[in-house]
Image (tube, rainbow, N blue to C red; front, side, top):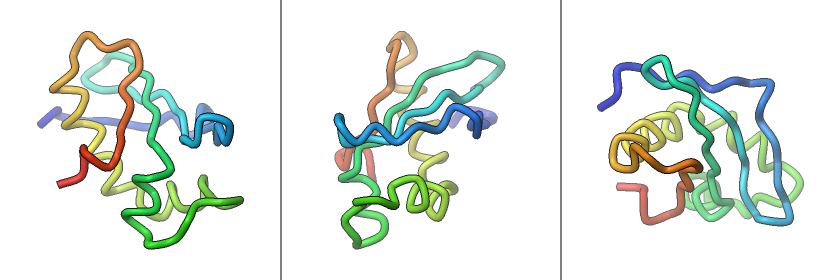
Amino acid sequence: MASSLVIDQNSLTDNDRELQVEFTAEIDGDDRDFAVKYAVLKELSGDEPEDDALELFERFSDEIVDVCAEAAMKKPSASLIVIDEGDLE
């Protein structure tokens, strides 16, 4: 697993058109762009992310950071790393 992944809290965006939360994170000294699909938030919380996607993201950020770090290692050249329910273990 990557040594560290730190989310830039100022970059968090709820993209309700694409049904995902988008952000930039620093991982091993490099900035990477991520998108976490609403389906992941629903899977983690059991609730449909309607007007509270960012709140759900924050509540489950520890789990999301782990999944994002693992996905970043699997997709080292991706310009945008999209996390969907298939990335959950």
